[in-house]
Amino acid sequence: MGRGGDVDGAAGALRRFVREAGGCAVVDGGLATELEAHGADLHDELWSASCLVSAPHLIRKVHLDYLDTGANIITSASYQATIQGFQARGLSRERSEALLRRSVHIAQEARAIFAEGWSKGPYANHRSSPRRPVLVAASIGSYGAYLADGSEYTGDYGISVTKETLKSFHRRRLQVLADAGPDLIAFETIPNKLEAQAYAELLEENDVRIPAWFSFTSKDGHSAASGDPITECAAVADACARVGAVGVNCTAPRLVHGLILSIRKVTSKPVVVYPNSGETYVAETKEWVESEGGASETDFVSCVGKWRQAGAALVGGCCRTSPATVRAISWALRESDDAVGGDGDRDDFPAVAVL
Ligand SMILES: [Zn+2]
Image (cartoon, helix red, strand yellow):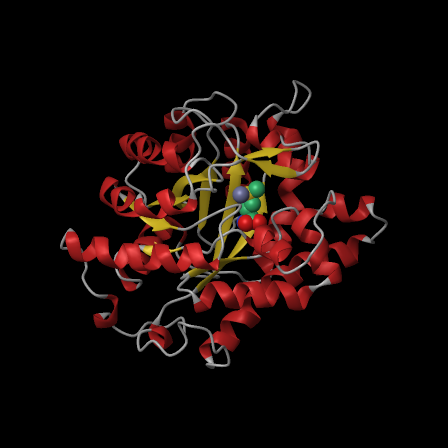
């Protein structure tokens, strides 16, 4: 995996990684949520990306907290970091691109610190932790995330936004992040098929050789947020050899099981799921509010075994989840693997190259 990897083998590379991780890989939890929990004020159009300027040490700490609690994949703080967004704040193009690169380097630094055993969290002394494979994913939030109007949860970009608009918006950002040397590119919170098509074309045109995943948002369990059937969205990911995994994030936990089953109808690529807490985001106030019938974090973790059995290969959390959620997911996966006679105890897994 990583730079220069075999393009046709993106799904194969992810599958191998999942195997090395013990049959199901643990994705980290909400980054922005945890930055806020440490006192960062994210009531800002740049959201978590504002910390790249003001508090890189905090980002590194949050990555370490997720590594300490069992994450195999940590996601960079670039979700809402865009050249256009930084420039609107008066930053130069060079500085904006340096901040994008910094997001990946902070995550890589955290991984190196974790590997050296500097981190003294609850997982640090676990005998499997030095051998735990860890990948750094560069996050690319959707166009809606840049708009900061909540449209990543509606998919409604208006008729003036075409595939070409989306491609030119994301092109340079994707290249800068890919050149920073992450192991994966995580296209997150994709609300419609159009943006998935734009990403797939960009990966080809820019000859990006780092495996990607496409992760959609859904509000109804059948479609992406825009109403495009999730099967059609996942089929776009399936058709792109550079995409190694496909799934959903920042979606209510109660919808995830059905979405996994639908996605698996159209692809045999690994399925990634990292739902939010089930609360709803209100763009006007930039706050999360309780949804009717929303699941609590406890319910969420109790679903992990079911998601695994439905075919999820990478499981984590998104907004309003924490290192405690990731620790619980990690243990729940271990138990469910034992229960279904999966790949067994992670402690028995061979050493891998990443750490
Ligand atoms: Zn989220």
